[in-house]
Picture: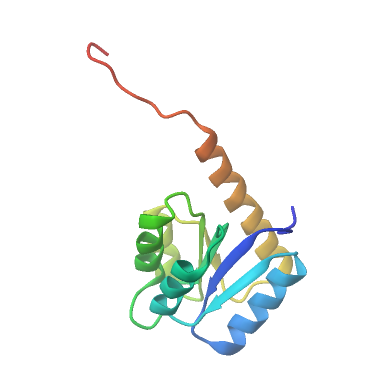
Length: 138
């Protein structure tokens, strides 16, 4: 799967890491919106008129965590797929508990592509499932 035509909001406070990950995403065909903090990402989401197909965010950001950012952005972009990243094993455990896809830094372009593919596929499958409703007597 390529990211051709997909818009990714990349949120990473370390400039060098952000540029490397952005380049990986560009090579896969993605359009990358870069942000250095949670508040910067929220502004980018609000000013971007088109869809955002994926949020890739560090777990530890200035001002708010990647978890908080994901929850905040999902208020207005309900079906936004999220991929969190960190070099911390504590963040891995927290992502697992909260049900977010996760990739541990440092990672290779191939590893990133694989996790993104699984994240987007899972998100599409969840979106395509019919809503379950309960009726009286069930």
